[in-house]
Image (cartoon, rainbow, N blue to C red):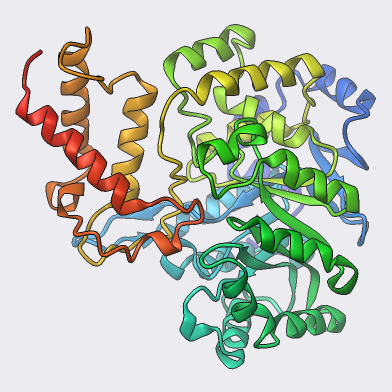
Length: 466
């Protein structure tokens, strides 16, 4: 395909997806478009070819309300453990479909996909005109050996190389507040002059917008915003969803409620980029009774669409990121945002009531980001935690051997555990070295959770029947 000599309409036709994609993505759009146009809930909101866009107040550029998170690109499994590789052909097809349907914001990082996301994203995007998309990437200098000025600058320059571009549209300080909070933040960005360097790159035009993503210590978030007049943040990336709006700190003491984070940005007129609208998939794989509750309200809509509409409804949101590994996820999200129909007050309250019900279930706050990997002892940490959460959501965690569903829950947990996690990679092999926890954006005490799950597994094995 000649990247400069093909129209969007021709591209859809040649790709052979026009009828299937637009048929799904645009169903019922006439009425929805009228609602969106009449809504006062979105700032500078426009719709072009059905996708909803928000306008960057600094540049005037239209950014798709659906942003592509490039943390979970599809892979081709290797013959040996750890030899998997990114499925570039599928990545290209996903990117092509996204662009053809109006998605123009792609968020990656040197840390994603075991360090391979930027290259795969760059290959896919370079096949299209550079002015047809926005690239967001990050200064992901997490390791102490990268905190010196030269090493951090090398990370930045390598991002330009891997992404096959000479400028970055949206550059982020990656996950400020994580680790040791203010101490790590100063070491990564202030003491070594890297933040000043990035500000200078913005002045030179090699960075168009400068911001940060936040996890963890609220002191760092507050410090960054207190210095907004100095650094003039163009955007900020925060975790926001209907569960975290009021319950983030309740679910994880180190997290901060989305209501506070968003409110602080709104007061300063700083656009918000939303990450984890599904909480790593937990708001699409909800407990069965929650799924029934959502389906009764909107039978034709997916469970996930509620969370995506919620995130996009907030007027200060520039784009909502989704890590769409599979085409079905992309098509469902295109349907939700083409165009976005903002939630009304009654629907928002319905979701807050739903969140109140969900916090009664003790899932682990794992978002499957895989920052904890690889484990030096080969443990598949995300798979273990996700299997546990799945069983909690499906009611397959029995309180004791006298529980009415003990036998069924026991079998579902043990059989599913062996299927999803090879025995040599299960929690029983955790020695508590804790090399994982410092990398977790959610500040999960990973060894503690693995040991707790392993004790539960052993109790199930020792008590085969109620």
